[in-house]
Every structure is written in structure tokens, then in C-alpha cells.
Length: 54
Image (cartoon, rainbow, N blue to C red; front, side):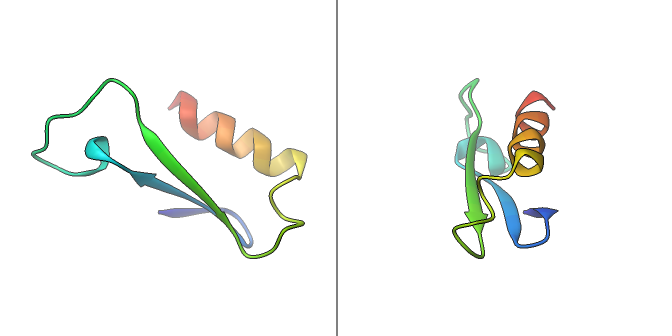
């Protein structure tokens, strides 16, 4: 887990997040925000897209 920006977090979940488990070629992420106004900002959306591309 890491902070994407203040109050917004990207969690890497699922089989690709656990060492030793067979993993699919798709990663699972969970987005968490402290409040409803945080997740709709352009900066947060760009951070999510950048994280998926890594």
C-alpha cells in the first residue's frame, strides 16, 4: 500500500500481491479514499493510471 496523494491510497491485492502464489496476468488493485471528494480529482485519476502501467 502507498499513498497516491493525501487521503487517497492504492492497495495491491489478489494473487499477484502474495509471494509464492500462482498469479494471473492481471493485477488487482483497491482504491481507498478518506472522503468522497478525494477520488474524483484529475491528479488521483492520473496516479491510478500510472500505477497500473508500472
